[in-house]
Length: 214
Image 1 (spheres, rainbow, N blue to C red):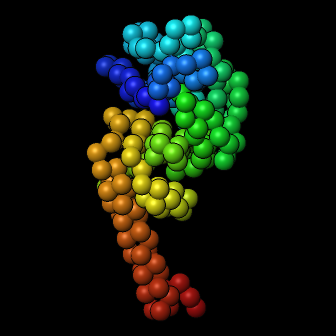
Image 2 (image 1 turned 60 degrees about the vertical axis):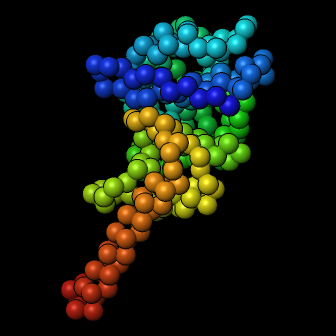
Image 3 (image 1 turned 90 degrees about the horizontal axis):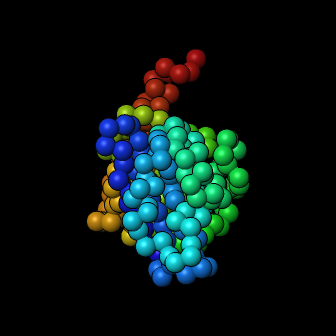
């Protein structure tokens, strides 16, 4: 599997898109674009990449969720490449809806679809156990402080990824994380679990002092 991190729009708020190719761009590989960005700007860069003789530059699109900065350029990409378009929920341009636990091929690697609602109800991550790689969209992986609400399923996912020895994280709004990704995940988990402990401790103190009881 080869992953090309495409350049985001320099002037508009847009996500990071990734083109996933097979190791040798054979006919059986599925050239896959993860996220399309706010417009069709990524296509110019795709045309410069070694996507394979006799193959379309983009044969499949996977959208980790449907926010405008990730899906706004879908019509332009579809008009140019006529790919299969996959997402967790159906909206304009989507030709295939994905299910939790489903396996989908990107390049020459098999990825598991993980639905996780830490960012939006239709957010998914794409996880390849053999390659130790995960595309996360806007699901937060780098958590520096507990300044928001995070679902329990995010803690479960972080624990799973730490145990799996992830080697590469491909997020929606920063470059690929290949330098000690496991350490980053452990730090994020520590932030969330410390916050959970504080909440539990505070709740216990309130109950003991009768604040929440009769």
